[in-house]
Length: 246
Image (cartoon, rainbow, N blue to C red; front, side, top):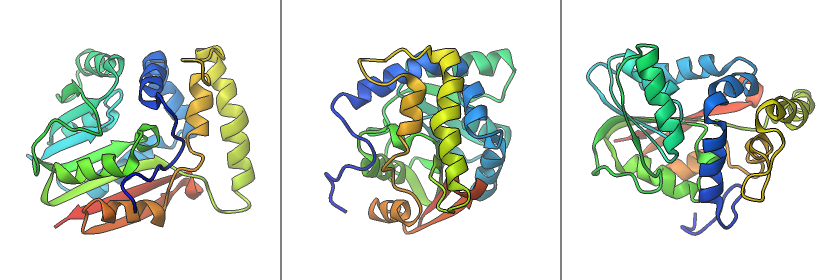
């Protein structure tokens, strides 16, 4: 794969737009995630934890941590967790959740998935949830996750996908293109952000052209992972990727 190949929806100023979108939706991000996943997001995260294996004493990184859901799950399983996100408002909310709900401690920080501020081979485990669609360079983001992972480490990434089943896909399309934006209007009021789509129009449209399945595992292998596989969940609405660095 060429280094400059663009994947998914890309446009000038995407990094700023995405940051502004997530600043706008931070306070209701968890609630809308539950709606967008049809209540299945906790099952997806449970499967991610299973693929990560024993986390006791392991150094763990959650990239694009958002409100910290995956980071706190890893911490609850004994991991020494760092969560990083581009959007300060998301980190602020994650910190409030951690103290307000007395959640297991994670170190939370603002940072860029395309330029992780860690040395090579720092972490035993790396995770990411629903972040790759929002970056301007998917192969670079995957390469960075591989770079900071130790030899013998595991990376597990969850991302939305489009079901290929012809019976499931019409229902999925209706739900994502009609129902989700309608729910989103309760929060984003249909207001454009930076002259572009409202928040939940973007979050559904961002799935278009996004690589998944074998196309994504090829990106993992090109990025330096020695093994990569994917698991289809919820009739294809989400794929969970596992990359192993030997």
